[in-house]
Image: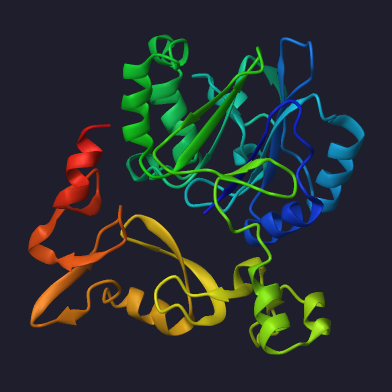
Amino acid sequence: MCLIISKQSGTNLPDEQNLINGFRRNSDGIGIAWRKKNEKIVNIKKDFKDVDNLIKFLKENISIEDDLIVHFRLASSGIKDEGNAHPFPITKNKELLRKTNLQCKQALAHNGTLSEYSNDELYSDTQLFITEILADPLIKCHLNNKTIKKLVDKAVGHGRMVILNSEGDFTYLGQGEWTKDEKDGCLYSNTLYKDTWRSYYDDFWGRKEWKNYNYYTPKKSNYTNKDFLFISECEYCGKVKPLKSVEVNLQTFLLCKKCRKKARKGKLFQEKNDNKEMVMCASCRKEVPEKEIVKWYGYDVCSECLKSLEEI
């Protein structure tokens, strides 16, 4: 799942270690959008070669008074190149969506996957969602309208979107929650930027030298970024092991090797219990009998959660 960082005017720049962690776990593209104080324009730049290049640019060009969005991409659809890195201008012009340096009135970044728009070989699901939905003048000019925002939130689902406009206003879309970091005060779309592996080794092993390694490297002679796993708690079994992200039931989970095998066989979150099929609700994350599960925009949710979701 991609990582978005939102820094509003008056907030410190994102913590350097958070940026490093974000890139290591989402290495398919780096992009930023920013608005200088007292300027009525949003700038987009997404041709960073690595995280060091990003950190240097932020230090030299972004001040505490400026508004900023940082996006680290983990590609789920479309080609993996600088043109498909986020953020994007909200426009129907697909050439502008793939420009790596431009100025616009509204810039958008998204984490998650919009499965309905993820079948194109060139353009990502986010780009197609922009051209087909958000770029309509009735939508993009009225995102503060409560009714329109509710409709877009439903379409985005449990992912997160953020839009920065030329007036310095941030609009947060989707039904997922944002995390405010204690170190820098920025908002993060998920917690994968945290050093969750540090506490494990310090508390149980007392090995300070482990801090030099963020990742477990598989025994391969020719490995890629996709072969790197980081150590934390498996989101299914809860054991502290090397993890890798896997998409299950339209959601992305960090799973250990054993649980990834279950996922490939379709057995994850569907364990037998008293001869009744148990399925995990995508909203409350509780396992309930299969007969209580209903489909909601492609997600498996329990009947109780469905009531609250339909009220949104």
